[in-house]
Amino acid sequence: MHVLITSDTVGGVWTYTQELVTGLAQRGHRVTLVSFGKLPNPHQTAWMQALTNVDYRPTEYRLEWMETAERDIEESHHYLEMLVREVQPDVLHFSQYCYGDIDVDVPRIVVAHSDVVSWWVGVHGKEPDDSPWIRRYRDHVKSGLRAADLVVAPSEWTLDAVARHYVVPRAKAVIYNGRNPEAFDPGQGKQDLVLSVGRIWDEAKFISLLLETEQVSPIRVVGWEQEPGREKKALPACPKNVELLGPKSQTELRELFASASVYAATSQYEPFGLSPLEAALSGCALVMNDIPVFHELWGDSALFFRRNDPGSLAALIEELKYGPGLREQYGARAFRTACQRFTSSRMVAEYESAYHQVASPVARAA
Image (cartoon, rainbow, N blue to C red; front, side, top):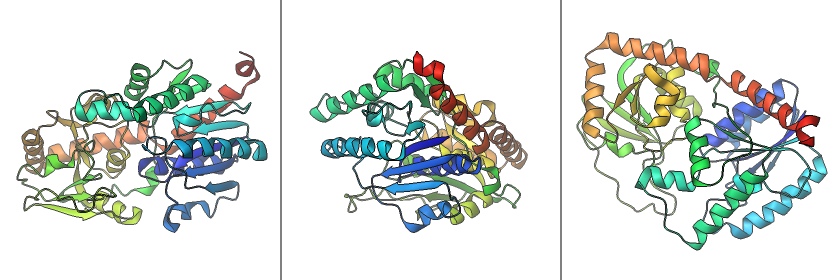
């Protein structure tokens, strides 16, 4: 099967794309991959070098959620339509809503990785004010969802949010994101170290919860400290036990995950969360903000602190520091759940099934 997949090179969507495209190519499928947004760095594309059946087409078109993206959306529509006619894929797999309605006769899947309105509600507790940008964005999302043969989301919570804020898809499915367990090292000796990964300026990641209270264990935070375009904004003061490490490579992150005994998932908005999964595959105990999606995914495999409460978070970290048996128990639980539910092989197999579903003659005739 030949699948055309769109992606962007920022954050978790690119990691998801790497796992999916690698798995599809290894199973003998042909992939045309198109990326939008910033052009990737060489280290971001090194994984493609051994995949002979992947045709990569990077672009710099702005992403659909950006306020000044309207012209780019129009131009990238035309670009994709011409590309589809050129390469003639069997299935289209869009990681952006706005391409769900492109004018080609090919079955299509739209993946709801995230969206502006549910992000706004998660962070601000209300929908964004009506504005020309938000109206345009909502129209693009609704149009793409309506035109999709199947809408996929990485969690039930995300699928419900899409239906609540936009339209109910005519066909929908949950396919949990996955990572390859072999990429991580759960057997390394653990240190008294708490790790968290996320953009420090991003209110959704809510890393500031770790900065508001003195911590009994050393805390390491990985991620960009400054929002692009706002590099002069002052950062909050760090408690003495918290160290901001900035961005790290995949190799460096692997070592940090391997040595940390606890992972703090502080997000107040999260459609899935790849970093907690990577921590679980590294044998870390998960301490998570009390939000519905984390309960859906991890259940009793994680410990939950009161929602957005830095004192409750600090208390759980202290409990795990002085309870090594409890820490090991929850590290083992998280690892077991990750290996059972959130592997890349399972994710790839479920996408294969979805592609066959939308491309079948019966589905096309419906």
